[in-house]
Amino acid sequence: MNLAINDSHRKELLRFLLLKTAAVRSGVKPGELLRIQHCYHSRNSEGFKFCLYRRDILEIMQLKFYELRVESESSLILFYHPEQLGRTLKLPENTAILQKYGYPAGAAITVMLKHLQERFAGEKIPHEVGVFIGYPAKDVAGFIEQLPRTPVHRADWAVFGDAGESVARMELYRRIQQAAADLLDTCEDLQTFFRQLAGPDFAGIPVFSRAGEGENFLIIKLDISKYRKITICEKRKNT
Image (cartoon, rainbow, N blue to C red; front, side):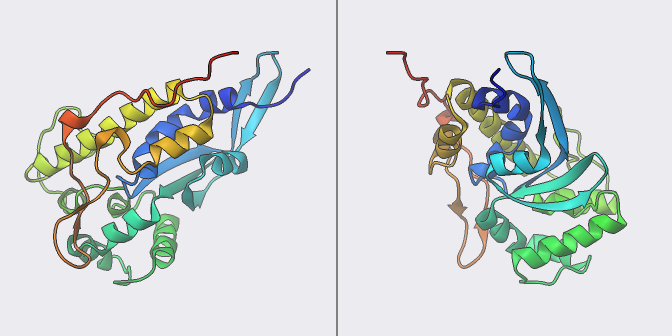
């Protein structure tokens, strides 16, 4: 009996996690907060029941991560892109929000993540976590201050004030996730998927766009017309 867990089984079990973190892996989104079960159950083609444990999942994902809260059956984990998160945390509008909750200005990412972890110990979901996962500062601040919401159809988070920037980011994250789904369906192995997704111009969407001098960056730039279905990861033909 073959008890091995192959890439096909891993892709089936981890599809949701792989797609939700696609924008992070591609360098477009600074982070993604996900609840990871400590054991994912499934059966292989021969009916053998196996468990993919949290430590195996984190190793397979091959992303930087920080455990914010560990519970009995699952953990809240922030997967993050170091460079993008670093830029995001340094934006003045984000710094202004974080300093209100004791985050030291200009501190290293590890220091900021440690403080976020401490905040998770005292609150169910600290609202400023939105900064870490790529929400516009105006939406994070609006949620904290309980301002009137701006109605947005199929919004992925609460929108406040002008919806333009918020909708553009939502659309960008969705496009990356859909492109990643196309890629995952054609890739034969996860390493190829990871390599293509982390490419410099994945799906024709530029990763970074400088908006000013120094450390001020406009993180989002999207030309939807450039989006295309990914076909570069074709399965090998049997010989």
